[in-house]
Image 1 (cartoon, protein in one colour):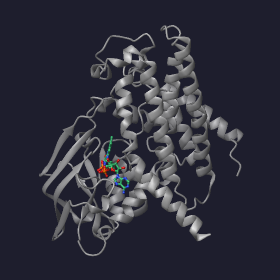
Image 2: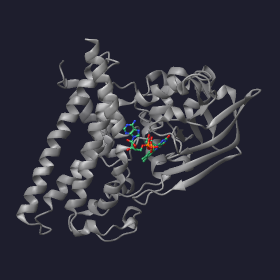
Image 3: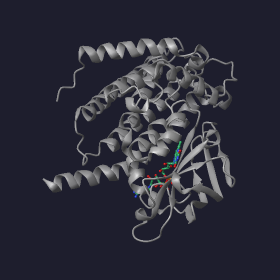
Image 4: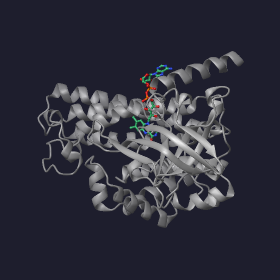
Length: 400
Ligand SMILES: Cc1cc2nc3c(=O)[nH]c(=O)nc-3n(C[C@H](O)[C@H](O)[C@H](O)COP(=O)(O)OP(=O)(O)OC[C@H]3O[C@@H](n4cnc5c(N)ncnc54)[C@H](O)[C@@H]3O)c2cc1C
């Protein structure tokens, strides 16, 4: 397997880094680099800029208006965005988009696809419920068919950006027959429908990204079912596995590494003892090595064509990426010293004028540390990924 970059790969990487760096508006870049919360308008502005270039939906093929990039080019694009201080990519674009490409009817594609990359329609993901997270198949939000509509009742939780969303793609129970997975349907719903209530959940870092979503006799037309009634588990699994490069968190880890490197350079200035500096540098070096290994693992997954469906690649990438993000955010907080002890949520909202001696980016170091505790939960917990890797390994060796 040849993992080295070709001259064309280097040319693309350099081109995209230069272009993206020149495109990010200064005020958005400042908020990103100061680890502050972004507003919806920041995402909309950035997305409009990308859309002008045809880069708003990096994982989409050309026939649906995407750039038609290879997985490696998408990695370089994602990295360029993180390193340039751009907002993160909106995850739903690479979730609901590929699902509609693969399973949507012509009418669903015509109606929904155009609004996704432009963010004319903001989507959220309605999978998790209060007692159905890891055990997703036990979900109880029920959709009962009445003529040409479904009547939906139930509750979703941890729904990221539901308060900004126009639509939700939802897993709903349409049957109790057979295994729990066999009675689930993938349904597209309008968040403005009567009977939808969104309640905020404020997370440890002071952010409001998460929500509870309640459905009370909400109507959804039958033509909004993707793939077919009781076929939702197939769609759900496709979606969870679709975007491996993003789940690896490589760009995000590289940006945190950049911050940590800058903070380490400022330690002597900030009066840290030689022993503390040595300890931080050793930890930073270890993380750098592991990040390189993670990058090569991602390259190997990308280069393996076709990907072995038995290989638990997505779980391995998620696990390693999560580990790096957690270690980097811990290191950043510890390096911020006394400045990191005073947890000031207002720093992340952009209201704090105080700049710690280690640099601007550590203003929100504690909040960032708290924020990244989420990475072991989001998209399937660390323990669940370990279970999946174990099972895949046993199956694989058992089959040999
Ligand atoms: C920041 C954030 C954003 C999110 N955004 C969304 C979203 O937009 N849409 C959405 O639908 N969901 C979203 N989620 C929910 C996420 O998918 C769930 O949190 C995740 O699937 C875990 O489910 P749970 O929280 O119910 O925990 P549980 O499943 O209750 O797990 C609790 C603990 O038990 C462990 N555990 C559970 N089962 C096992 C097992 N079989 N073996 C070993 N250990 C086990 C878990 O690892 C965990 O440590 C988000 C979560 C977070 C943190």
